[in-house]
Image (tube, rainbow, N blue to C red; front, top):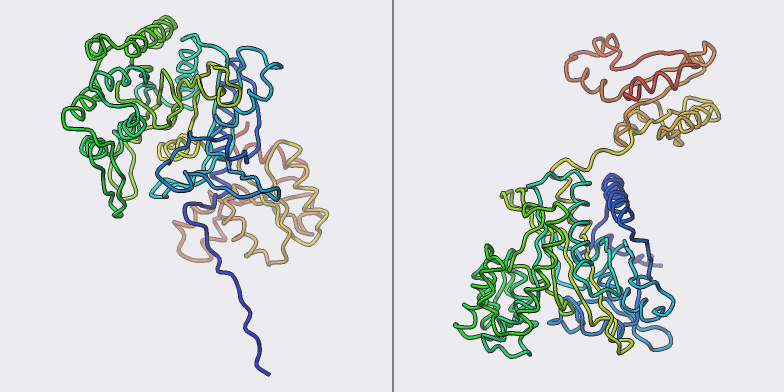
Length: 480
């Protein structure tokens, strides 16, 4: 009888997703803890919403409206209703506020952190799942709420060890661009396409945005994105306004006579008055007409935090890292549920992207040094040593495999352990214990030529009194 062939799935990642190592997760945890500390120091409290929302709750405010599935991952529940994975933390907040409006303090201030999912075309550095950390103020139409978020964002970046000059928080107002579009006679149906095009200025450059403002653009993969269909005069007006370097005084003539444009100028003047009065200079928070943000739900001030230092891209070229956070005012989002306008403003940090930048700059630090206690016969003894080290505040692991000592040492090396602890029967009888500094051992290994040299050098190894274990470990790891 012919043996049936077993069908096995191929081990592979879905396109646009990735696995993450323990070291990356530990580094991200440090970043999240720092952001959380700053946000809470400003009086923001946490709120957690589920990963799924009803699809109709997301509405038209989606990141990729050119795709049939509108940029989100969706499934149908057993009751026939469509659910979608959240694409940001703002739409779930709007739903939460609408459900609980009468019970919430006004304004309501919350922060949220966690993964978001976007069914967009993946590319270098662009994934379909990533972590965002948001803060929002709902129920205040004062420009002071926007100014506070700008200052908090600048303080957060400095708390993450970025120096002044390595970042800048840029602010603009959607109403200014609305005024320019009005003056250029661009009909409102093209507004969203124009905003999304200008939002890509830092990534695609002037020529790329020019194409998107016109008939459209074909990317490197051959995919074509339909443009806004503006004429040359309209395109030039939008690009001239969006070029960095403008001041509030210089853009005033471009929006003169437009109620929206003039209102945007006043809001920006109020915001900048607050931040300057609190000592945040232009090197930290600056006006920039090139900031528009791509999502349609923004209604007024918009802002973006950009890193100004250069990093290596996937091709090994030096490029300016660019945006790691953004946000703005969205006064109409809650009204989709209640019919009542509720002013709101928020900011979102792209944690995954920020982590990439900080890793390249060597700013993420290292994880707590790991100590591996080898299995040398008496399992209870090795676990007792590990327990004692953990009680003293160290990260310690007792080896649980069945391998020989050389293989255990290789395991500890692969784990990136700082120290290895060995306590065999002979050491136990003598009241001693062996400590092996793996880093020091590696340095010695570079200079020895024979096994005899290695044994003689002891390769970072020391024998200490068992009673002095914690004190000796503290010395080796620099805690004393």
